[in-house]
Amino acid sequence: MSFLISDAYAQAAPAAAAAPEGGLMGLLFPIGLIVILYFFMIRPQVKRQKEHRKLVEALAKGDEVQTMGGLMGKITDIGDNFVKVEVADNTVVTVRRTSIEAVMPKGSLKEL
Image (cartoon, rainbow, N blue to C red; front, top):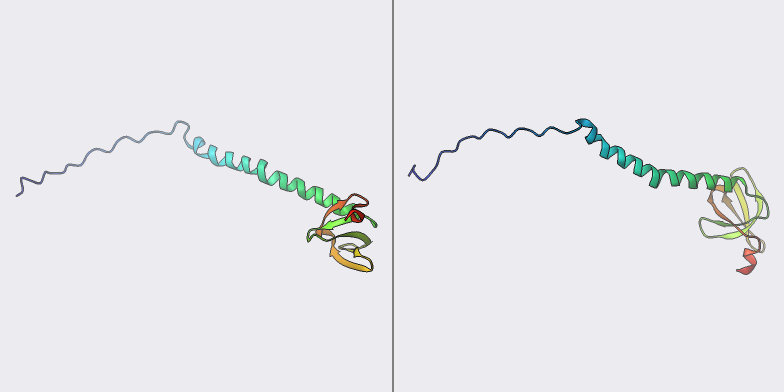
């Protein structure tokens, strides 16, 4: 029965292919991903944060604003961290300054 089983011989391992630029090509892809991530995600987010900070610092009494929760009203009083917003006649709500999402054009509340 031993004539049906052939002998197995080890073959020589093929020569390893050398990388053309060594480790530089291996680093090119992750560096490219970081650059793309910066320009498409990090940079626009930082720009939006700066614009929002300017908006919050420029708030003034009498501005018509919209909060992140969707409330719209007129600013009646401004503190360091909080703003009092009149959302209806004799209805004043206190919200954080950073929760102001947008300053609406004058007269926007009357159109609603």
